[in-house]
Image (cartoon, rainbow, N blue to C red; front, side, top):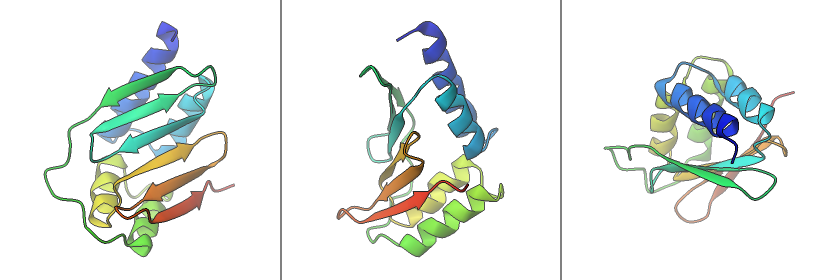
Length: 131
């Protein structure tokens, strides 16, 4: 992976986890370096970024202190998403809200323009990017 691409991904990851950029900025910055998708695994504490040539980059983050809810509450996940889309909820709070809603992780399909959120028993909520 080129150093420039790695640095853009790392800087985007850091800024998002600090709550200093919103999801739209994350999408724009990652698409600019041709990231196709990325997967966030709350249980393992890592985000994996995928490039078209098969290259990946794993970045660790601290696992939450509080336990993720056992039951997947799609309505609560949608509410967290809506807050993020409106700029009222930044990523650190989004992580807490989605974990409380039973989300164990998600995959952002940048080129497919949607996100798949996952529960412990394979439940899935798919959220399309707004136009």
